[in-house]
Image 1: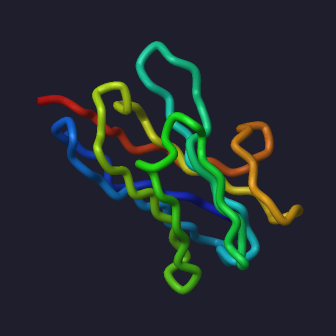
Image 2: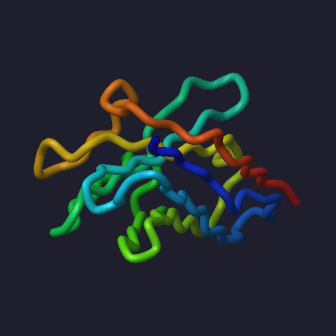
Length: 126
């Protein structure tokens, strides 16, 4: 059965950077579309980045464009989310999610995804 495990969350100072990892097991990453979501304290879950299979197609929420970069390594069965210039409002539990590839683009809507990880906590504070 497909499982997703996130890692890389940490306490970071404002302006710092972080790389989150989403490791997929029980399936081959090449056949799956992956997205990252976050849920801040008292906030609704929101999609921040997604990526489809090769040729890679990615998309980002407007609020993170230019600071978040999603990338996939099919050989490692892992998707990464690089976050730079972290701000206190970026603190959240970050989740990755997967769905079998159906379209030549990816979605930031949570109802499109069937598999979810447990999340990794990102805190931003000086």
